[in-house]
Length: 199
Image (cartoon, rainbow, N blue to C red; front, side, top):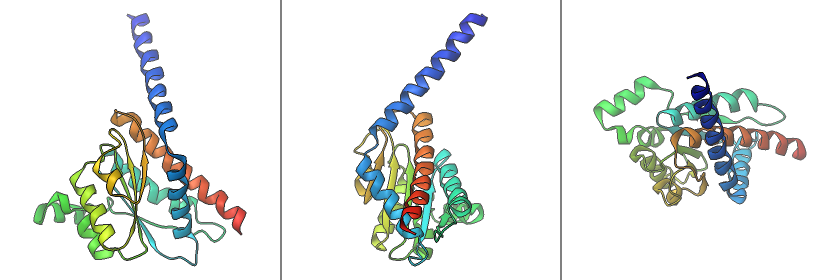
């Protein structure tokens, strides 16, 4: 039994690592640079727009982690990112969901807060979550820039709608979410290093 358990454990580790490696290899480097440059431009002190992050479930956690890490870890040398997770205000989210529709939980907030020049980072492994799709549509109507982090099919709705598509070719939620989290960290490293070269 112990040997069998060890075999399952080893298989899971190597299978998961394989999926993550496939995900990293599938990232379009040009799209990554476009996303990182947009985040950097939006974060420098003379370009004071907001970056809004959204997602459902684990993707909502990544959206909140994005706001935490960038506000604390990237505020240096002229970098002043204003990252706001729209997944953080639970009373507002439940009010919108109850009184209007869960599909409007992010688009409603963007209509109240978003403006031209702001950036929306939409995280959805499937790329087809109705509330995330609607948020991208709303952001575009407000002349905001949009970045989508997706998985599964490259032809998902979010990837097609967004100005910049960071798609990872993974057919599993857990591994796709891990790579999305890593992309968030890699862009943070990019903008910090980009800023050192500039200042």
